[in-house]
Amino acid sequence: DGGITQSPKYLFRKEGQNVTLSCEQNLNHDAMYWYRQDPGQGLRLIYYSQIVNDFQKGDIAEGYSVSREKKESFPLTVTSAQKNPTAFYLCASSIGDASNQPQHFGDGTRLSIL
Amino acid sequence: GDSVTQMEGPVTLSEEAFLTINCTYTATGYPSLFWYVQYPGEGLQLLLKATKADDKGSNKGFEATYRKETTSFHLEKGSVQVSDSAVYFCALGQSGGYQKVTFGTGTKLQVIP
Image 1: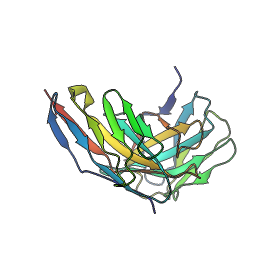
Image 2: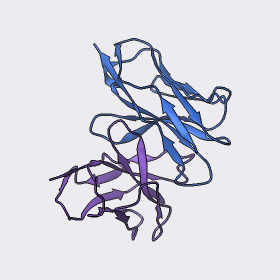
Image 3: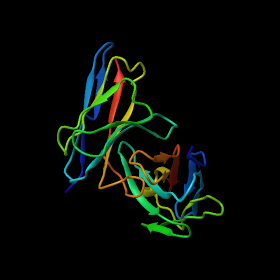
Image 4: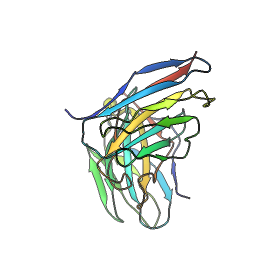
């Protein structure tokens, strides 16, 4: 079955450490997204990518970085510059413009600070 | 800017009760509207969508009608089940940009037997 795979499910970060969250999709979708979800809040867009080798900042990109070297993969790095990284991170993809096409989501990665 | 307002939860209902979760939006133009559902420990899944005024989206017994005159997209189900317990997100998609999807804060539904 096609879908989005995020790993790991749980991740712990030490002070001053960069960590990378994996996102892989086999849906052949062009567009991919990273969202952050905090308790009681909606999803906030971190980065998105419309095609390979191109990505754009979302609303809360500071302290995060991404790459899109392959269509299937869109890893997110949470850098030490992100001072409040504890959250649930969701990766999504869409066949086209997500403003009128449904997004498909992975099961998320929960990041905590040690 | 665009915004989506949902009723605060949690909403607690007995099995077979009628469900309404309110959603109103603020946007220019003619956005698309979505309802997503999130089960515990999982990502979001599309529940239904509507792309123009007066459209009705429906899926798995859930329905929502795009009301431009009241800028609303309320989610309804005639008879809820315990398995419907989840968090429901209303979302708005503004045409013209891959990044232009605005989510509400989510409404948690608890259905008790």
